[in-house]
Length: 328
Ligand code: ADP
Ligand code: DP6
Ligand code: CO
Image (cartoon, rainbow, N blue to C red):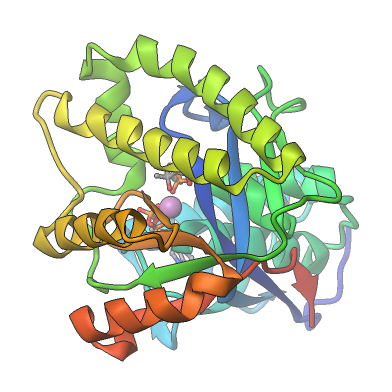
């Protein structure tokens, strides 16, 4: 297939916060998870990526925030572009320019927005016109959580069993529209263990892993019931429980590891204090030290105020449901 070598395609995708977590791959090559998961796409954090296939390049060129990258980061993008080249039947190398409006590799799901944006931009630059389900399947190959960032609002990744039936779907007409996520960016630096390594270690060494797989099935049912019933208390309670159940898989791995820092624990305790004082809120934490506080619009200001005093206002961001992937 011949494509024009100067077509630059730019896409934007937002990160998502998992409320029922994905933590473990049944198949690592295709990124097929052991369980389903459920997330909320956030308006405040996103990646913008442009891709151009160019006959003058002798290898893929990848920059993130104007820095050319090499090593593992480059390899991961290169492997992903190989999937796009295979699907579209092109052989040209690509120039990828990406900007993260989210801290990279700090547990704020940069891999989700990054590979959702890359899937959209690269597939179109390669001449393909994928529907959203196919885009979700493609994004999944770059990072599991990315398959959910193709869609806005509440999203479920239906685990499936193979490459063709493992993809995300939006949860239509969701309630809980006044939901807010107060993100506490206590740490912007790279986490010591990537999500990919961390989940692999949990799957192979935590004696509790088989129980996790069973528990996620019921947690998923509970949270969907809560969303349908517009039951914020049930929604927040199950989100907080599921997050702690995931982190128990890091503590019970061999060797054990932990994504929390002292600030993480202080934030968790403060959420409990606020809740007991009548300001309803819950926490969830992905693979990193940063805490996301789940609340409703009417309490967002009080919660923001409390954590701004604790950590400084620059570390507190109020997010609401964000949009799906789009082209510029
Ligand atoms: P996070 O919590 O940020 O998702 P992960 O460990 O899951 O952390 O993934 C981080 C990795 O995702 C980075 O080390 C890098 O390889 C990749 N990544 C992040 N942002 C980008 C980007 N804009 N373009 C390409 N790859 C990216
Ligand atoms: C804790 O999607 O980053 O955020 O598929 O290996 O790229 P890879 O992992 P990734 O893992 C996300 C883990 C999590 C939970 C979640 O987002 O569901
Ligand atoms: Co990630």
